[in-house]
Each structure stands twice: as C-alpha cells, then as structure tokens.
Length: 237
Length: 237
DNA sequence: CGATGCGTTGATAACTTTCAAATTTAGTGG
DNA sequence: CCACTAAATTTGAAAGTTATCAACGCATCG
Image (cartoon, rainbow over all chains, first blue to last red; front, side, top):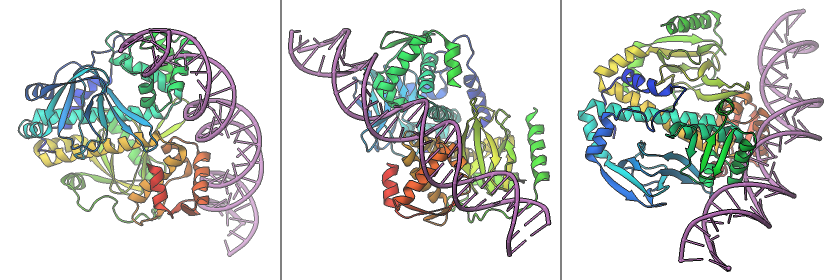
C-alpha cells in the first residue's frame, strides 16, 4: 500500500497551485492539462474495461485492489444508508481517477452512469512501481491531496442552502464542461439531488427558480445554460 | 515572503498577551501509542509556542509556511463566510497535527480554543527532510490520507439530520476522549453548532432531547455522559 | 396505443432557524 | 465569601426552508 514514498511536498504545491487558480475567462480542459507520470503508468499497466449503464464497477466493503480512470462515459460513486437514502460521493468524468482507498476496502460503491470505458490498474503493481519511481509516488500523493481539496469544497457546499448548493453545482459542472456556459448534464435530477443532499423536488424547484430569475436557461432537462454567471458566483459565496 | 513576519508577529502578540493560566484538564495524548518518524522529526525540529485563549495561530489566506502540532490545550480552525456565519473546520486536541496545506496558502484560520501550547515546525525544513528520509514523506502522506478520511466522515455527517449530527459528534468526541463514556467538552455550544452546521439553539434543544430520551446526561454544560451508546450508535447510521 | 420512467408542480407536514426572553454559569471586585 | 455584571445556555413562539405525499405532463419504447 504505502510503499516508500520519496517526494517533497514542494513539488506537490507547485503542481496544485496552477490548478487552484483557474483563469477567469475560460474553464480548463476536463481534468487539468499535463498527463503526469502516474497517468502514463496507468495507461501502460492498465486494461480497459467496458461497463454498460448502471453496471457495478466495484462495491462497498470490497477490497480496493484496483485504481480506476475514466476513459469515456461517466461513473458515480455512492453509498446507500440504512434508511434507504443514497448519498452520491462524486461524479467521475473522462480523465478522472477514482477508487483510491487507504483502509484497504472501498468505502463507496461505483456504478457506470452511462455506458463507460474505464482503465483498470492493479493497485499492488502501481505501489510497487511507486517504490521504485518517486514520480509515481508523488502522483499518488498529488491525487490524494486533490481529493482532499475537493472534499473540503464539498463540506463547504453542504453548509449552504439549497439554492446555493444548486448554484455551486452548476458552476462546478460548467468548470468541468468543455463548452463554457452550456452544460450537458450526464446525470439525472435524482443523482444531482443525492449528490447535493437534497430531494429531487427541491432540485427541480430550485432550477425553475433560477430560470425565473433569468440566471439560467433549461432548454432540455439534461442541458443547462448559464445566463448570469456573476449572480451565480455571488450565490456560491 | 511576508508570511514569516506575519506569523511571527502573531506569535509574539499571542505569547506576550498570554498570562499563564491553569490549562484545561486534558490528559494523555489522544491518538495511538506509536509516535511515527514524522512526530519525532517535528519534536526535534520544532519550537513550542504558547497561545492564550482566542489568540490567532494563523489566518486564512496567509502562506502556509509551518506545520503545527498541539501539545496542550485545543485549537480550532474556521472560516468566516460572507454572510457572517462561521464554519468550524476542526477541533484539534493534544497530539493532533494541523495546518497542512497544498495550495501554499491556508484555507482556514486557526485560533486557540483555550490557552494552548503548539509545536511549530517550518514546512520547508520538513520538506527538505522528507526529500532525504522516505519515512518522513510517508508520514506526510499518511497524514494527508487520514485527513481525507476524516473529511469523508464530515461529508457523511452533513447529510444527516440535526439529531444524527449531534449524536455523531458526541461519539466522535468520546472516541477522542480518554475517559470512556464521560466527555469533557473543550468547546462551547456555539462552536459545536458552527462545526455541525446548525444553530446554537438547535444544538441545545437536541442535547436536551437526548437527555430526555435517557441517552445522555449533562451534569454541566461542558460535561456529557453517554448513557446509551447503542442508541447513539444507531443514530449515527 | 398503453406502459414506464423521468421531471415538474402543488399542498401539506416536518424540521430548523430566527427572534425574544428567561435562566444558569462564570468572572470580577468589594 | 458574597454580590454583581457579563456571558453562555436553555426555552418558547413564530417564521422560513426543505421534505414528503400526490398528481400531472411528457417523453420513450415495446
């Protein structure tokens, strides 16, 4: 698991700094520019698997033996609570790496949101390589710290009201979307709700509200156009 | 960089303002017997600074040049939102390491919850050491992954109802507390509320409710005794 | 077509916050 | 040690937000 990791956190800081300050005019390509050594290694060592919509990639409590990277389509991670509610951990789009665990077991399940291709790499092989190649170890570290930052953003989001959560979500999706202000949502309202900790009705009503306030347009339910970014940003806090 | 001056200034302010007052009755280190190489290195390279209650350890947006470890007392990290609300990121008790950042800047502010002693280590020195000693780098990695896990727990918590949040909080504090079912809270109701994303009134009412349900006892406002752990666990989910 | 799944809308209920006030606790100076 | 002031906590009532329950529209698909 945690093989010898010889890296400096300075390198980490440098690599994450460029990402944490996204330029105002245009959202960057999906998952940041340069394919690091980790990505390259995964490409070389991994195998591509295909999953059809709603197929399980891995399940909660299963041993976390692999690391995954979305090639095409989308994958959601989630957890079903005792009361039957589903909590979505994240939406993973092409380029995103997921499935990294530290307790040896997956704490979430993962399913394909659509037909998807996923690059699968044995964790043990990657760890072995990390022991020999510091840049791989550093890649894993960077990945972890990015995940931590994303999680912090999530905590921030969950402190906010329904309106603010939806606005934040739209901005986040726009950031990850290639097409600027026009967002093609790869997930259903129910999934959005389970991600934001709201009900489907509240999400729907909030979107309607934002539309009435002329902040967004909703040509079709899976497509949303941001019309007043400043106003949305202001909500975001 | 300016940060060094800023931090030093705060340190001086804090230490000069500090009269020595009996520290909180906080026995024994919280976490695990084994002091890893990282802890040892911090011990060797660091200096202990004293902060009086409510003194600032570091501020939001300041360069994160140091890593901190609580020696005695407690430290809270927090963020003030635009609307004036305060969000508490974490409560750090003796043995806890905090202040680790990846963007180069602190995303939260930190203040002493009580008179506190904090071990302060220059980040650059630690990074340099990590470059030479893999066990230090690994220590930083482990620290990061632990933080990630804690943050995931936090996201889980924020999906839940007020009752569940308070129950989770009590169990978490009990976990960190040396004295089993009797918890000596080092923070006020307001701080608990800001940590859980609730109001002080809701926290108070919920505690009263748990007391009425015979799940806890509240001899004094800063002391809580768990009377029915199974029931609390059940709430936790 | 009719069935089915998804999204929207409406009415009502549950939960949490807000505002206000009472009560307890802690700190200070005599 | 007591009295007094300030702060923290608790409690109550009303308002606001979100969830729940129910119904409807609108597509897709067999």
